[in-house]
Amino acid sequence: MYAIIRTGGKQYRVEQDAVIDVELLDADLGAHVDFEEVLFVSNGDEALVGGPHVSGYFVKGEVLGNSVGPKVTSLKYKPRQHSRRKWGHRQHYMRIKILEIGSAKKASHSKTVKPKEEGIE
Image 1: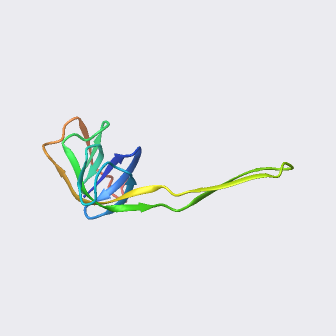
Image 2 (image 1 turned 30 degrees about the vertical axis):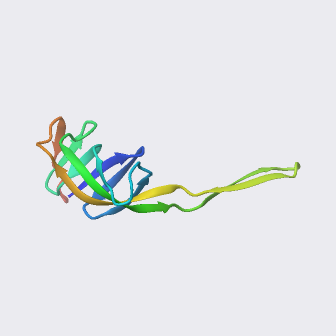
């Protein structure tokens, strides 16, 4: 079973026991976080597509710590003026382990989609 959630303006495909890096959240180390914006849920047999969210489903995670992304360097250069400026940036992320993907009740306002069987067109 997997789900697609939205947090920090980005979408993430998550499974149980997966570890993901998301934008910084207002949570402490070891705290449990709930992701309410579930956009898609699939259990292998059927898929639920939200419009825009799949109601009744949730994703729970635990904060493992903080991390940083790769360093991105930029350079501003003006020819014939002896002007150059170089700077760098490392984005900070929060590392989260997905504990559970579940449903509180029967999903409503969502469309059930059967995946295509391979080999049949």
